[in-house]
Image (cartoon, rainbow, N blue to C red):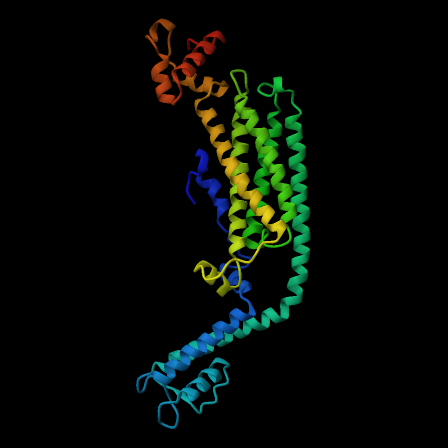
Length: 370
């Protein structure tokens, strides 16, 4: 995943950690999740391929490196027979593997034991897995709805501020609460997305509702940042940009999960899709709506976050006053030299007019000379 996305939006290494599957000792390993995705058809294909390869080897192997039947090389039916009885661990002993054929026989046994265990486990746990899936889906929908409600409350509290007070008296505690909530939602979505397939079944309508609330929260924070001026609170502005960044990272994560889920199928189905020999399964209306919503939000928020970061870096606001103040020389004004604002503007990457306005405001506030 690149460090910079469309619209100039950036995210640091810590933000990108949420884009990778979490490894938990008590949760399924990547190999376990792979086996869980295997269908009965996958198991049949793997078993058939194993038997075909080993049978062909026993039939065509050089003298002394394959198998013996009464002192001679086996025919193809006899080679198939040897592979089957070895695969199922029966091992009658009437056809004997020799030389490298013994290694092939061991691999046959190992594959047979593994596939048999997976088959028995899938059959035995199928009903229980379905019931657990229903319970898990119900719980995730409840949790996602609770997150959406909390977002509504915080966004409403921020939006209720009179416009004249948005840049001065907006509640920094609300933004801090929003930032903490977004982090909690991100942790929950990341963990359940990779470990429990939260975007693969049954949660699409609830996710769409959550995306709507994330969209509203992002717009509220973006307005706070872009309205920040010379009288704005530096902490509020920094928290506003931080909230925009966290919401964007969360939406990017969900967009990735939706795209990955749309490509998932059985093991061989996924392989055929990757090779473009098969089209992905059609999405339901609710699933397509949630996926489309995440894509649109990703695109619009990337542009919005780019605007917020550009304003933070180059705009005229209280945070810029602090940056200019830090670069100003010490001593009386007479010792600054002519056009002191130009080297400061070049160093900070702002326009000369912004640097000049910041210096004038700092003089007005009595913070200069230092």
